[in-house]
Length: 116
Image 1 (spheres, rainbow, N blue to C red):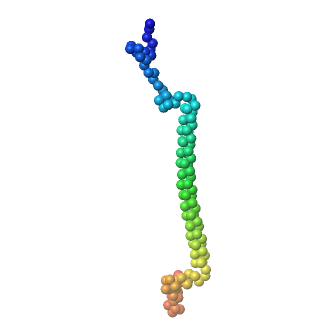
Image 2: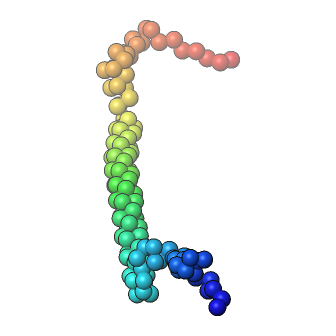
Image 3: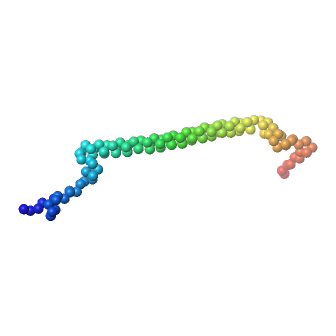
């Protein structure tokens, strides 16, 4: 009588090589499907958390840029007001007298120069 391939010379059966699924304890197709779905759900959840974090970071940066833009608009308005006040007649003369301590010369101190 010939020996089968599953028996050794002493008559004991050799354990068949088990697959990775059997090693993990997955014996049915539905269990494998359940594990696969669980992995996909966890991965999806982590992706949502990552995207939410990125959205909040970018939104915070956007708010900072809007604040900076508002500050620059305020400064621009102040500069426009300052520019318009310097254009008023007498303003330059008043600044020269007050800030630079300049004064108008007397008529005897004025020298007329001619180009001929």
